[in-house]
Length: 514
Image (cartoon, rainbow, N blue to C red; front, side, top):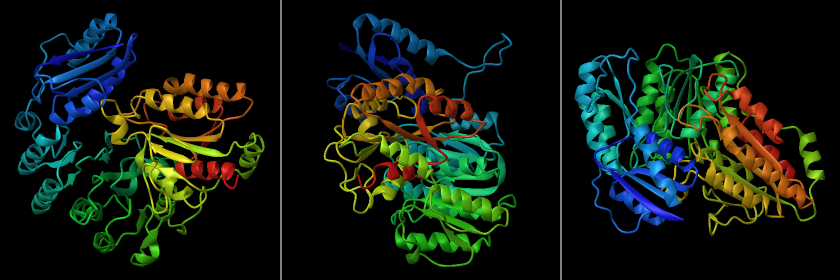
């Protein structure tokens, strides 16, 4: 195996497009690893740590780098494929002249003057300036970019508040605005439940479950993961709550986040109560007894419960938090098949919030549990690359995505971890998520099929079972086909649950106290 680096001058593409290009190149014959990134200092450092470059290439931040590891004979073909993908342009399809894409916010607004939102995905050092331009041009902002300082985030959000706008982000990966899925999001029916979330996959889980329960989503507003920190003060969540409060289509409000700073939580909940609408609150891991109590505030212990409570509230039914259900008979049958000393659980997640929810649910049940989304009483593993004992890993963490596409787009790294877990005689259950929707892999079933079959065959040849427990986060309208994905994974022997919380509860019942 050898390395090859190509520099394409002044070929800016956003991070989602580059992750998809990286995944496509990595599938080519003779290519072991591929990474397409902009040549920012941060990305160059990531490539060097990933072993894909040595030293600093002569490239500017607006240049596109394609780093390849594989057989030399495959490099030219891979670069041709990359250039064709980059040069492909949409058009009207009538054979006439093609209009050049807008290359600035000003040009875009000249062409589409009724726009009210800009989705910004540029390297972090440019993101703040572009977001400020958009705000001053009268636009709301969805800031997909990360690596924005806390000081800049606070300043942008204060500016947005003064202008009556909102900044969703930075590092905001999910939103549904007026029925349009943005970034990593699912296709949900319109309805009367509005959501504001500081968690991408958390927001996806709640919205898809609302859809599957027969209700719909008015808006799903992302805030970015740092919004509820004391330094930021929940400014985006407050703006989202105000917008949902003024929206006649929204009858119920759902708030999703990891535990906020206590002062910020009170400010956010006071604002929610001021809307006069019922509010479902899922602050994962927070103690409801320490939060304000009011008839219009309903606290949910899981993402699934938050969706169920929101639907009940919208329909005028009784609202109550509930434990995650699972088939106890299935758990007993699976448990009875385990070999002696086969007692460990491994979680291999692509969604960070799913991994965090699993950590909270399993922390008191599995002795010695480790997680790279640590919670109270659950420390991080000594080495995230070498799991042992009970262990939950978010493979979308920065540690794993340096120089690689996100695991929602490219399943190769997670597939390698599946085989490693299957080869460990102590592992009884592999717990995982399958995320559908825009931005995610076009067919997770095909990407994982061979690996799951091989993993189960490895265990079977060693004289032991391997239980695969998962949930599919998606809707019937998602491009991957929710029903087809569920049927395909079930045929592979995966025990499917309706939600992440139910999958965790089932996995816990199989291995707890072994």
